[in-house]
Length: 523
Image (cartoon, rainbow, N blue to C red):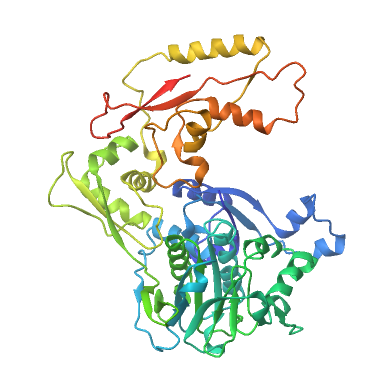
């Protein structure tokens, strides 16, 4: 679970009321997050075993109380103080969930991004963009803006391998913008890390510098993402000024300051879906500081081929709201409550799933609840997610404890019991038990064993050639274990065994509605 650190005074100022530490801890529990620690910069430095400071340095640190809040890994809207305070205010009934507005672009050039498809396709093929106009920054807002990007990079963006965020002062550059990939030595710019000395690097020398310079060690983990590529991705303006070298660093010229009013956001990615989620999250969190709160200007992204012909285009950010449904009976059953349809629809407003309504036509299980999912709630994928949030809104402490109506005694399955007995006996005979992967390649499962290729449960989108089918025999795993342990001594022999399941096609016993067509078999 990600941990978000926020100053207590700033958080309470955003919420508009104060709490004791015990009251806020209880509020966090009711909302479904956890107040993990109450600390301060000075206290953390005193307790740290890795960072050693002298007494004067420790005394200079702030004693401002800091809350460390653990948030669910799929709640990207809670990764900054703006998101946490907004969600808590909605939960407390002190504000309605905001409605996001996509305005008409005020400048056609600035709202255009051209992607050179032939070059970018080889490294980071996607980009999405947005513009925030008339934003007002102060020190705290600017710090939170940077911290949100860091949190997203660590979590959803998978250390920038999937998505990298670039934010720029739009007034310092000129559109239209271009997303291209170029040879490292053809890329020359002053990176953000060397603004003061205005030192210019080319792409290759910058990678070397970030790998070896101690002052840039925070960027070193990202260097391998593109270092060995023949082309590096770059975002440029109409004057060929480099705005960023994703996923490494932004350029100095377009850096954001406290005086920045218009923010150009670009997210380059290998996964377009996650790029849209990241962009929507950043826009949703910081558009509240725009002159028109919760508004954003779109950018048209156009992909061109070598003939400079547009082959694909889309407009971002999406900021989609969508409708999802769940049976009232299902929600009540899953949570263990008995709430009528209309009150249940009202509960949705507390967890930003409103407006909600009961559909006029009932389903097989009775009334159907329809909720409105905002662009910040990409975690809502199924009726179970709706039920979970309604449970939070209802209050875990309000759920009446009941004794299950069934009375059963747990016991071990006979097949598992037999397997455990066999493991004990074979282990006593000097064999080493192994546990190998259930997926393997077609070659390993059939061809390498001298067997004809027959029917097997296969993956429609395997991650690589090693995970094409579910094994029908345990031999490939055992032989691979032997292959990877050839350096061991074979003086007393090499005794391995595995008792596990294989999966076999089964056309006779097909489960109705969830057509499986396969069965597990213990070997």
